[in-house]
Each structure stands twice: as structure tokens, then as C-alpha cells.
Image 1: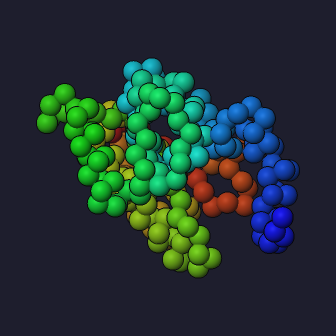
Image 2 (image 1 turned 180 degrees about the vertical axis):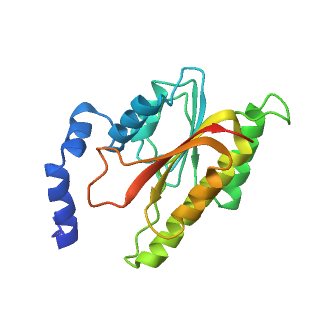
Length: 211
């Protein structure tokens, strides 16, 4: 067996000690991300049985598996494999890629009753950039993903609907929040207990969309 790098070994050691990662493995939740969404759902009452949900950054499927138990339809997007049930539509690719965007738009148009209606009750994003270690570059890429999510939400969310998106605290977040608050009744920043304490990630929960 090849010898593991020091960074890989540190990651494995952290996973073994991590309560949420260990619990997710033991209970078959897919990933520790399950507990983040579970907490946010409980706090904000995000999910209802008749909802159509777009999930961006779905792999490996921790959120997807939770959503499938709670809502009517899930559209999961990620370039990596997603653990999903037969009723979930999985689109393989990255948001912003021409082919993926084309497939997604065609699907959303098909779900709308007519050209004037919007099909989505909730847009979720757990997307994160590939970390380079250069903080300014990583933050810029993170905000690019946040902006793409926001554009999708603004175009396809129903009036009164919700957006949940992961953001990394840093440059660009305050300006983005100011813009989002113009189109939603309430916007909250939350750090779930399952988020690692050393991580800059928080989740923006925007409710009451006003197209």
C-alpha cells in the first residue's frame, strides 16, 4: 500500500476524531453536511413536502439524501458522483459550464407551468472552490460561486421562496449581502454546529424572495 502523505494522514486523523463525521458514517447519512442542513432546516423550517429544490454542489450526497426524505423533487448538480435516489434528477457538471447550464435551464423551463412562472421553492448551494492556499484568490473564487448561485435563485425562485448558500467570510461578503437584502424579506448568517470551528464557512439563509 502506498505511504500516505502527512496532509492525508492529518485529514484521516481529524475525521476519526470528528463527532459529526463519525456519526454520519455510522448512521449512513453520506457526510457530515447532513447535520448542517438538518440544523438549518429545524431552525428556519426550510423544507415542506410539496417543494421543488435545486441543490448545487451536491456531492457526495449528504444533503441530497436528507432532502429526498422531506420534499417532492430534488435537482442535484455536481461534477462529482452524487448518492441519490431514483426520483432525484442528477446533472453532472459545474454551474457556469455551457452544457450544464443549458441542461439545467431546459429542465427548469420544463418544470414551469408556463413561461411566466418560476418552478423553484428553494435554491441550496454547498459549493466551495478548490483551495489553492492563496487566500485572496480562494475568496474571489468562492464569491464567484456565491454570485452564480444568486443569479440562479433570482431567475428561478418563486415569490416568497428561499435561498440557502455557503459563503466564506471575507472580502466581498458584505457587498453581496447588501444586494441580497434588497430582494429578500430577511437574510441571516448562521454557522451550524457541524461546521468546523476553524473554518470561515457560514450559511446565508435568505427568506421571502421578492422577484
